[in-house]
Amino acid sequence: MRIVIALGGNALLRRGERPDAAVQRSNIERVATAIAALAHEHDIVVTHGNGPQIGLLAVESAADPTLSAPYPLDLLGAQTQGMIGSLLVQTLRNALPGHRIAALVTHTLVRADDPAFSRPTKFVGQVYPRDAARKLARRRGWRITHDATGWRRVVPSPSPERIVETDTIHDLLETGTLVICAGGGGVPVTADADTGALNGVEAVIDKDLTAALLAEDLRADFLLILTDVPNIYAGYGTPDQRPVLDATPAGLRRGGFPDGSMGPKTEAAARFVERTGGLAAIGALDAAYEIVHGRSGTLVRPDLPVG
Image (cartoon, rainbow, N blue to C red; front, side):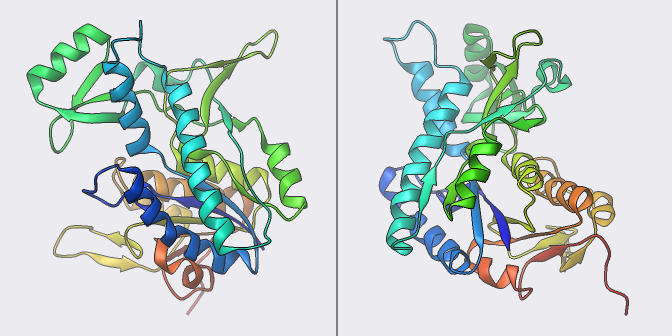
């Protein structure tokens, strides 16, 4: 079976942890353990989030006095792909001796006229007090908005249209290689209408939606979205909270899951199942093997079983 695994940001940094390299190296051991169990039996493609990492690099770049301008988000995204990809390759090689493993810097095509460019919604970087955030917004041309803890920069999050390196990823899979790619949703690029030339853009693509598109293009059998909860919950955080163990795309869309957390994951799972007829699941990293074998997580399928 061919499985595309989308790792949440908690795979490298758990909530509240400092973004130190040593912390991320330690946490990634859990990732290797979870993936290795599946890689012995299946063809695996791994994608990953990069929220804390790109936020850290964006803050450092903006504060660097030697730069005439901060590095753009597309290049910062490429840097995080290299860093996280290297961590994953090293750890997975140790967990899977003799297994071919490769990390690929990946670009994702978006439309230049995507409405998201005029309505930025994706939080990037640290939290600021209101006055400090407003000063930074004026000085650097940022858009800012309020989240649960303070004021933060927001950037466009256009919809992924195509992964540029899909053919290369497919070829690597055919040689038995475990491929790490499309980190952080991929480096966002647009294509010139006349020449096809690629140009990086100031945006961050949702990694779960990119994972769903990649799984579709690779004709994967299963899309596995790993996060820090054991399954989807209806009424999350309320007295009526209950686990959802089986779902359909239509049922997920009726669930009203919030955009900032479970919403993109449920939408990615719904898209993949609708477009391919395959299976998707959402659950905890440590239960990856059990999720694929139907013993944990929320399974998303075209139709629910009768009876």
